[in-house]
Length: 158
Image (cartoon, rainbow, N blue to C red; front, top):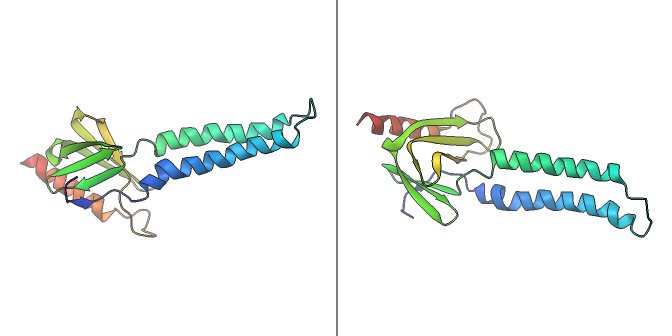
């Protein structure tokens, strides 16, 4: 990677790799515990006690898929371009190739979606969670995102 400035959140690894394992681990325990407690007694499987954790597992998976799993692992600002990394794959996106920058600060985690003029290695849209100040106001624009929007606009006009 280039020696630019990281603009994506450092929490992305935790959100994408650690939190799902913790959440689904707790749910697996919630399913296994009643099964282990009723082991050896036929006909006493507590199906209602299993329904809630299984339903929560489905809901968690859908939420993670919608809000977390599509986030880029790392985004580096390299002045006239952004370097986007998903796993080991890296793509350089010139600012002039970005046609829209949208920001959703109310979602958790906050999300920045870059719409590209032409689909790249990661598709036509690249989403990442920006660095955030601790307890930053909800309805105040993120200064990092505001700066990125201005620079993308200037690069498009050139």
